[in-house]
Length: 285
Image (cartoon, rainbow, N blue to C red; front, side, top):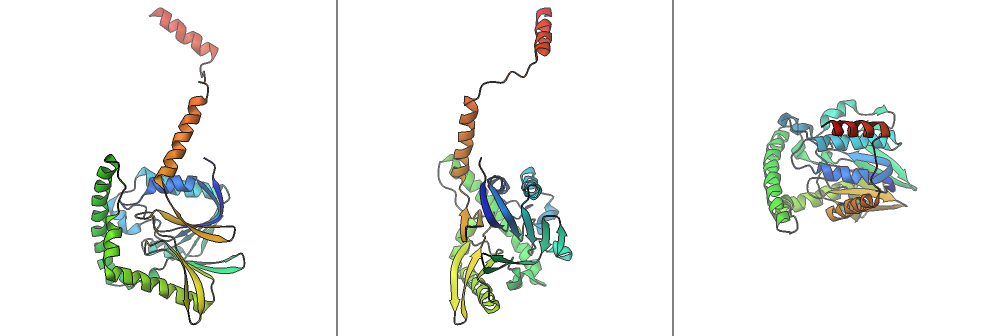
């Protein structure tokens, strides 16, 4: 598979170590791109969930792909979020192409870009409310497990997958209002600081929209997540786009590879000496 060359890719909210993480899809995506800069914008490793002793091979493969990018020259910046906040004690750590930090400011083609996870705007991730948030996380896990079972049946019936958690969020007015407030808070602060772009994660809601107030305007972007939306932000040739993972796209490429392999001649891996030895053993029996 030819890798797409990109200037910047922003991923957030993979939640490695959580049941609902679409790790294999994340691996497929990472294998398909070759960015100059990869920004991991928080909640990549779900340290809150580590007590479950759940960290499958596919989740480790995501980490392996990231380190493979590092070894191939990609600069990787890991911005901490609330689910991996334990890493914040090591902020501003720099090891080769890998940087660990709490926020990142970039100059992209003359435009100031501010990237941070966004949990600083969320009161439910602080103090005693954090305990409630963790308890709520267990209910969310159960919802994801039920959703996975439903989607398995839907696939067998040849129907499209569905997201229960997205439907719940979209049906609750308070959730919709909270997302809107989050976006406007981030945008207003970015306008005040004179940024052209502000990029967040945290709320699992992919977005790209211009937000304006009486002081100016800013392009607000959110990279979404790899639990429900399977999205990333890609910057190339001066433009930001939301990338949405499509299973059919990758399935088609896998089929193409298999077709190509069928055209290849079979390889004889036996040397003359080994072939002679096997033939002589057959003659004995």
